Image (cartoon, rainbow, N blue to C red):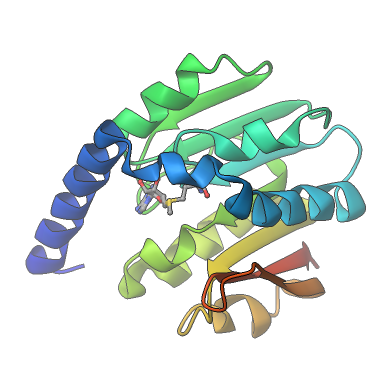
Length: 193
Ligand SMILES: C[S@@+](CC[C@H](N)C(=O)[O-])C[C@H]1O[C@@H](n2cnc3c(N)ncnc32)[C@H](O)[C@@H]1O
């Protein structure tokens, strides 16, 4: 990123903090949004190992965990560059889970995971950094581990990173719809090969 991109990136981070503080993203806990979290959980159950370790990039305030209900996992790490969202996630006290305020662009995982999730987060990563972030995360995905990506509506400029990636094989791809024509998500599950 050049200096101007870095400035906008910093401003976006402040905006996320402000929005989480004001409750703007509480809507992610609504029943309408629940469908996409449920699809992600279903993919983890269908394609992940038992008791997986999970990395959730851009985890927000931990709504994916809320929707995991009785799903067993050995370890869950949520990261988000919004400190406010991370404080909210921590306050939920999920078992076997940690939440850290980190920027996906810089974050170096210090362990490997069975499942890595980009849940409504990949398109926020600056175009010049998308490939770097994806490659770094793939380096920390176990062999045969799975990556799950959810993107609102069409995800223009995003899906090719996964679909045309020689390190990944598509396992499933679904469009999750709601009763609102324009509120839908595409969700893909990929295996590391
Ligand atoms: C639409 S929210 C989705 C939150 C959560 N994944 C969910 O679906 O409940 C997008 C999240 O991505 C985070 N985010 C955006 N850019 C990021 C970056 N470079 N590093 C870490 N988190 C980022 C935002 O702070 C925000 O919490």
